[in-house]
Image (tube, rainbow, N blue to C red; front, side, top):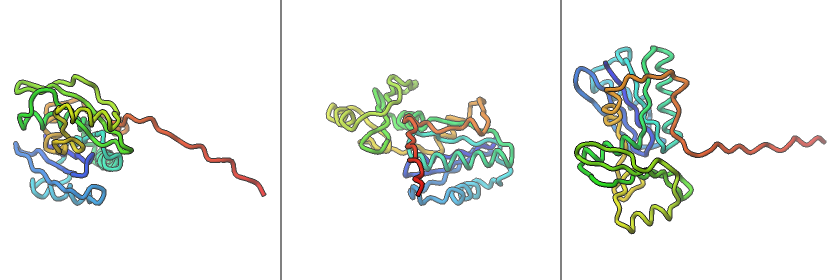
Length: 207
């Protein structure tokens, strides 16, 4: 199966393709300035793959840059609408834990991503050469909690960690390659822990 992976949840955005037993990846550090379609075209050209050869798309769902994740989801949804491709969502936190394991960062590892406003997305994993498991569920934590972890010399990795690590599309691809729990486009949603807040507009004054 030829699979395209998109990971736009951090300032380092990437796309990767699995085709014919090999992986190609393109990375940009432009954040919001990234040309998403241009990035995809680059990796397709590198892999010598045409758009209509893509059979499935895996998307990094964050948490992280809401704008970036939404852009990746919209691209995948449009592709399914046009071509009927299969879709998968992958946690960007699990992606980072997998990358830590690949780098032999073992023990209790805290995955940290910027949640804006002085807060952070935080999850803890137990990682070894034999596997990895989440031991503290993803949550929004205040900056003081991250400072305490750092003072305690705990391992903190991720875009906002002391060991800066960005989730990569090639890892999203690896995590998605053995899965078959495909979903419909409308069910592809960002991992976003905040409740939506809406401010009701005041009534229109009549003159």
